[in-house]
Image (cartoon, rainbow, N blue to C red; front, side, top):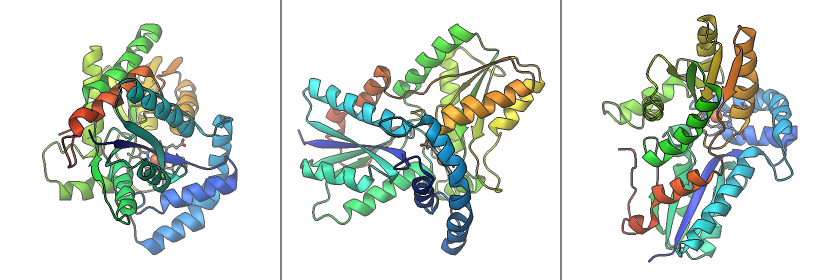
Length: 343
Ligand SMILES: C=CC1=C(C)c2cc3[nH]c(cc4nc(cc5[nH]c(cc1n2)c(C)c5CCC(=O)O)C(CCC(=O)O)=C4C)c(C)c3C=C
Ligand SMILES: [Fe+2]
């Protein structure tokens, strides 16, 4: 069997929670033309002149709330996941090395790939920690990985797992967590809140892949994930909703927006709400603070009484096993081209 390397990739984290590191992180992130897809000169003015210098103050404060001895939440959860997966392969007697990388800042994709090359792996499986495909996340990770390996003399066999938003093991991992919270809190309504993207991203992508219910259309994919989780929980509409959070800037993002949805739910008399965020497989600023603090305050200010949030998958055993089985090294070893789990 070929020696395989797995590159687990999440979004990124500043090196420290200080404003200067956060500014550097935001600059690298938002200068990616898959994230802010406008001409370079405009993006440069906007990001370097406005967003990074101003936003870094507030974001640094937010990171400081969640920063621990071992770094920010995405790094801490990612390292633990990496360790547990390495142990799982070792105990299964499969020769695999798992490396965590971040698309922006550190540990970098370049360092992760080079560590795998040092291990003399013959094949690399890239597993983005983004279940739903988006050009801004999964697409950007794939582009960066290709940029790095394209400089090598020997390009190993590569597999890009570019979507797993309907994979039963990913769905079940969330179902188990939400089921426990439903039993505990007995919410009247479950809100599935995903990170949003600008509408323009989806329009561009749908010009490229012209398929009904295109699985790479992020909005379609998020709704499919919600429906699958809801179905397994025995929930039916209107007792659950899908919405989109974390928008940035003035352009229209995909709707409905989470804040507007929470407002409507509260105004319609919902008192007990559970929020689940399946686009994040690790807790981070956008879950713990945006949902756990901002949206809680919003709901309560409009008469809501009980606001609950389901923790993400982080390094749960069930999630570790799910990744192990989604990647399925024994089968994937026979393949040398990209495999799409969603289609
Ligand atoms: C145009 C801007 C952005 C797009 C498009 C975008 C897409 C996108 N992002 C994630 C996942 C995460 N984003 C996170 C933080 C974050 N996202 C943006 C902007 C865009 N994201 C910013 C500016 C930030 C930084 C924080 C802030 O300023 O609000 C994070 C959390 C990082 C952490 O906590 O350490 C994640 C994860 C997805 C999945 C996605 C598209 C589908
Ligand atoms: Fe984001």
